[in-house]
Length: 292
Image (cartoon, rainbow, N blue to C red; front, side, top):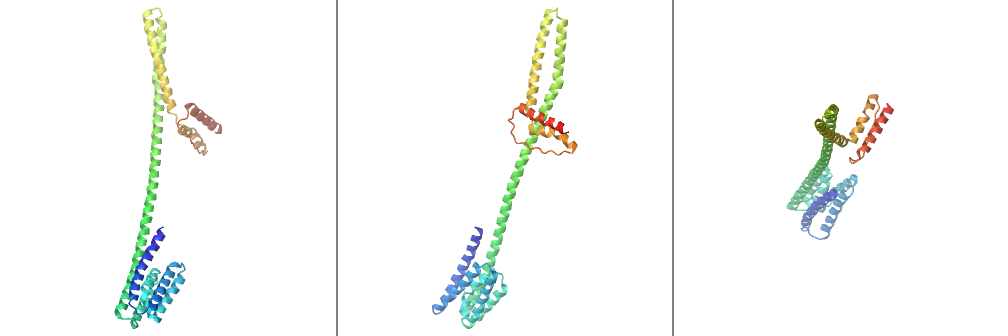
């Protein structure tokens, strides 16, 4: 699409130059000569733009310049061909074309030769400016494409960073839950167990005292209920803190000490029942022990 746009720009520029040359040719007497000159110039210009072989375009441009020395009428359409000569960057041919235009002074008036010469120079300048505009446009498009690609990569990296951050926060939360559950089990649980045993011992000692026995029975029931509640909370904390991916990676770490490389790939959600998670973890740990 961009190439078609560049071609259309060159065609538009050459159309303007051809119209200017046609206006100049209208001042020439007769009909056959101006028409032949216009057709010759348009043919050479179209040939230079259409062919990809630079040798063919070079030969066509050289022949047209030589013909201008033989037939001065052809110099009236030289600005159109000069556009293609400038596009091919054949500046020595362009210089020869200028000489051919000046040489046509013997057939035409000075003002006509001057007009053609100025038009040829403007044609070369127009081609140069158009080419520079194309280069800048291509650079702008490349810069825009690079910017778009970098933005896409940046968004992808930001997404990965957010996912990694969320995963780290999730793992840290699970570790904290495990720590709390362990501390409750090791500290509060033991204290309650000791209190329950002490109350049971006091119940045996004060079995004859009905009032004390009833009071101690109530305390024992309260402590048992508290113990049950704490156990349930610890189990809930422990179950909710199981991260299958992290636990499996931790389970295979002992193999690293044995210089055994293990690659773990886990493709599952977090909605797996805890019993199944524990089965996976236990199987992996047993397998690691068997390998060691």
